[in-house]
Image (cartoon, rainbow over all chains, first blue to last red; front, top):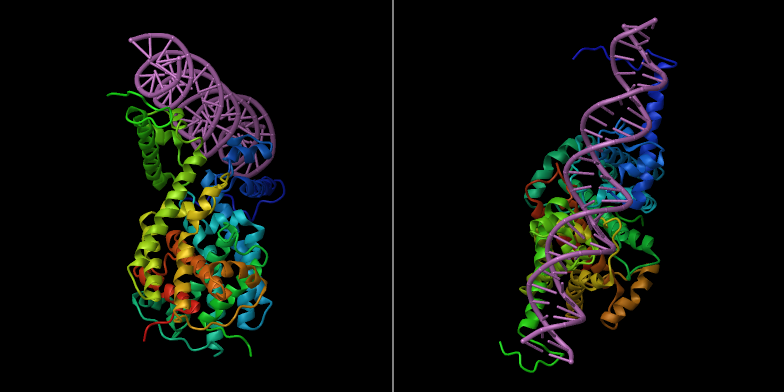
Length: 240
Length: 240
DNA sequence: CCATAACGAGAGCACTGCTCTTGCATCTGC
DNA sequence: GCAGATGCAAGAGCAGTGCTCTCGTTATGG
């Protein structure tokens, strides 16, 4: 209630030394936890993390109130990491379809490099875990990117005309479309969501071993085939 | 009971009574474990299951060598359950597109009714768990069903002609296509796999809460929209 | 300068999967 | 018909878990 807490602006020197040490410690715990994620999956052991840091388990609780809090931090980081990877890749291209493909491949590459973090955010939810509100905005970055690419193509007039949508779900998407851009067809929003979902499905299937014994070598090519199919469905045509 | 000259190989009566009790017990453990799956997810507690059955944890090990063995049994059951649900639904229809839609909706309905079993088979892999060979055949039932529907449409000549595939992955799929049917285009196999993957992606996205705040009411309609899109991509056209 | 707040260590609670031993009931070969 | 083999459940025990609480220590800031 009172405004007596120390503002981080004024104190300097030794004062924010402790704060800096604390921030470093907080980050280091995350780093080690991320490594443990690779072996233990979502049920990582706080005690093991503490052991690796040369501290006792209860000390970790000074930095994260619970194991779930630590998981939340990792989840937010993962959402931001894959979102940023996709955004960067897309920003390097000019044509909408090129952006689309670049974003998809960047997401897949990130997932292949960080499979357990991918599982954390796009796999089955951790049993007792309830995602807090902080995660929802980072969680939408990739979806928003796909939507932005389609919207850009639409406003540029290079998006192939699509049949309008029918169905109740289309009405539900109406306000979303309107909030992005007045007169944006719901079809664009629906296609962005569909593409996001199925892009994720394709990556998950590859990562979770569902296409074993079918495609072993050219999984990247198969993924691109799916990416292009999704693009065509959304109205992004190939350049002639 | 007259257990006169019981041959050493084929004892009946009291002999297989014990076996029957054992089979019942084995099944009962699975039933209770399935219930616990709903609350604990993949990391269900063997001890809790045992408690619910009025027995001690070590007794369960008479029936399942390890927790992973119990999980395997549940996984196989789940694969078979969703496979059978989809097959039954498809068998009730005549036209390929109707079979396609029925199979998809049946799979989704089953997933909505058994979300944790869905997560077990199509979600992120359980950390230490390695799926044994017994699971691979049940795991392919839904995929095979989609492939069968497309193949049936192809042999009936009602599958719209598709562009041939290009890419290394297409060559990898060649032997699979040949093993199903001589001269079956790889495109059909690729489309079946794609549809299977993205159907699963759509269900997972809905189940794992990825389309929160966008479509809340008519998720079935949105799913059907995706189903029809996948069908069209695979060459299953609407009846005029 | 000294009260306060942050901190790490350690013990402890209730829980987990799993192993091993023990005693008992049931089945089975002679 | 009985003695021995076998199936089974219980219990103790091990090593591990998340989390809480208490206890000295140490750095911070009024």
